[in-house]
Image (cartoon, rainbow, N blue to C red; front, side, top):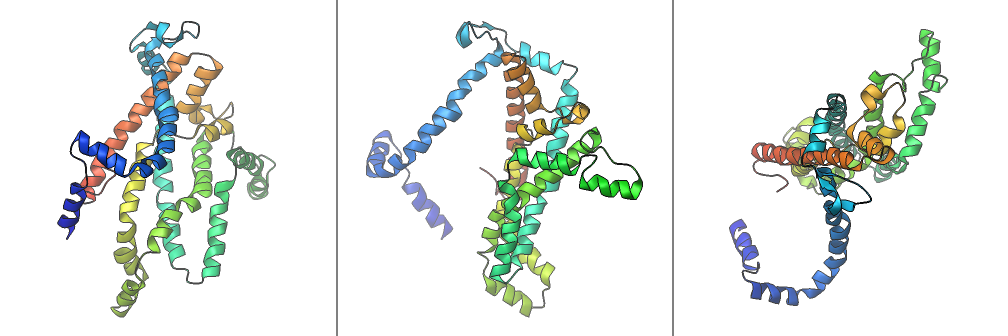
Length: 317
């Protein structure tokens, strides 16, 4: 049956330029619906890639991109040999890696727990409570962190009462990663669980009833029924997350930076902003950003290859 479906799918694919034109004419309305999204993608996603050329040039705004002198890999070598490279690169990698490891399982656990709530009204109220932090602005979240973790904030008031002295959470470099990751889990985990909740909703209740009759407990039903259902989604989400492991949100990290926590809070996106927009070294900042993107592409391909090997060929592509 599966081979027949694949054969039918292959038979609908146009095999020549003439048949391709006939295929487009036949389904022109679908292509018209696709056109706006395709045009916007070409303009705002692929069009700006032309500007990546300045990473290989001694860019001058007066001379323009084409008129600037070609310097090859000079800007890349400048970044790789910079004394800040190791610190910035490792800060970015550690923040992304620990964030992925700690945050990836949380939406799955939330979805599995929500799936066990049988009362619809209670489930909706819990979901509303979990999804709400996602709609809070990053600026507001960081402001809340500074208020709650300030020396006179409620958390430090409890610590002062218990230990006799406050803890400078936002100024100490060793606390930056934990604050960043835990606050990120709080704001995004509930919303990220939606896709898993939707997948679990398609599980046939008869499977759980049959497992109950066979004497399976809750953990066994989750392991053998629920987890296999969401495993393909878990694989795709993990591949995308691992492929963007170096793409940390700039806004939150920059807003959380202080003069004293820079040893751990200075990451590639904030570094690119400072040298590109504040210092005006556009070519160097473009090289750093392009280097970061290349690492993400390599990680995406590598992780997808590994997951396909471990997941019976199910991957991103």
